Image (cartoon, rainbow, N blue to C red):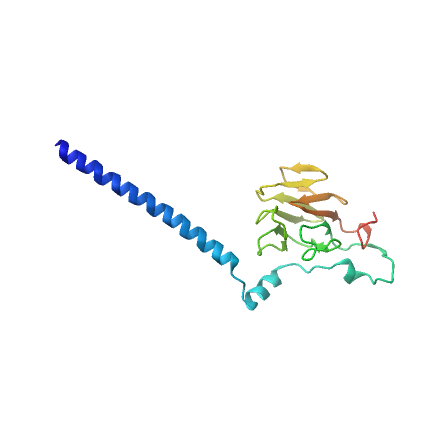
Length: 187
């Protein structure tokens, strides 16, 4: 009886050890497959499809001629004005990001606004349109969202002139109907 119990325990030990090795193998295989997929360049058709989901970006260079000083104008829809970016070549300061609907912000390519910032989460924030109001929602980001220097925990209604920080990217919220110069320096 003792011999058969020892044999059963030995077999159970090897079965559990094999299951543990199998689990570790699956975890590493999945992890490396995801890393390999993320590192592969997209095909031209995939890039075109992803770009159609993103919002058009309008920079101050596009909206004002260099010879003319910026004019004050009233906005028909709210925008996020880029103040600083971790990668100014991909998201230059002065860029206006229209907020005429729901917008997702983050590092992942499936966001409406892709933040080229390693301190931004894959899916960092969501801006919801509720009538004329815009609601900023943290999507469980690691580094959080700061509005006017304070970390937000709950959903936050944005007000004209609010200063937003997501990772190392900084924005100014400009409400619809507000008067700002096209460089964002006016109020």
